[in-house]
Length: 387
Image 1 (cartoon, one colour):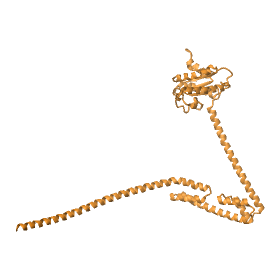
Image 2 (image 1 turned 180 degrees about the vertical axis):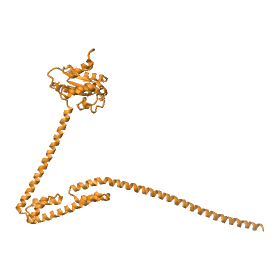
Image 3 (image 1 turned 45 degrees about the horizontal axis):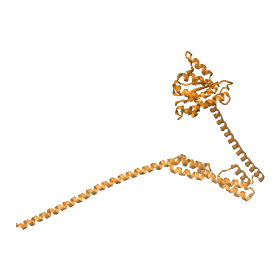
Image 4 (image 1 turned 135 degrees about the horizontal axis):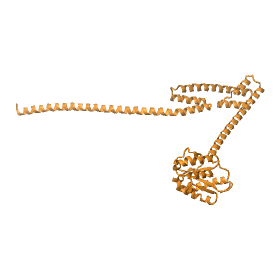
């Protein structure tokens, strides 16, 4: 075989290999496209499934929101339906109940309300038709009764049916009631209505008077418990004042004593506290004696006062007993913040103003001035003269 033939054969073989390779490449491309399309299809299907789930979730949320809105609308619609029924608007009330039934279709109570209202609407329609007929006949037969005609028309428009009036008008039109008797019956109905209206007004006034009496009684009771039982005015001599306090509040007690100094200089006040007990004296007997003769007893309220057994069990109890008996005036003076809810003195008017503790005032001297002025007023009441 010549060289040319071998070369040509080689070329042919290469050509065949190239064609086979091209066919393989073509099949591979087709397979690749098919695989890509399958993957794309799966991806699209997964995306569609995800979107469908999102749509279902949104629909579920919308359904829940609509159900919640319906539930929120139901009480308002029921109130509106009952208001319309009270106002004799039976048709509108029935339409409202029907709307409620659409929102809550399986409720037998709503169905019962609709059935009941349908009956009332039919009855109202029958009465309205009867009123129209009676009015028409009355206009034809007796046009001299404009007041009665106007009343019948008002009944037809408002649905406020007066059965007695309908009965006598019907008897008159059926010739069962003479004209004179009809006018007498009409006048009687009118007077009965005036009497009933007057009676209703009287009952309303009586109820309001009873309420006012109850309020006045409660006010008097509250005033009686909060105001001190003042002893009789003293004929002469200064008012005796007793300090009941815890020793932890001695500095504040001294500041208060300083602010009461003017009353002492004016000769209208004589104060006493346990620091006035002289050496060798029986302190318990001294405190008891001063407590029994005091005209004003100041309770200097603080956490330490509440915690003191002697202040609470001895001085406070005896002070409140004398206050209730009208022998002395007990005045709580709130020095420091503390919880005195339910305390025996809780019913009494305290100082300073609004029972605001002295230590919470921006200027404590202003609090002590307020206390001094309150004590001055009590002294004026006890002495029966201006101080």
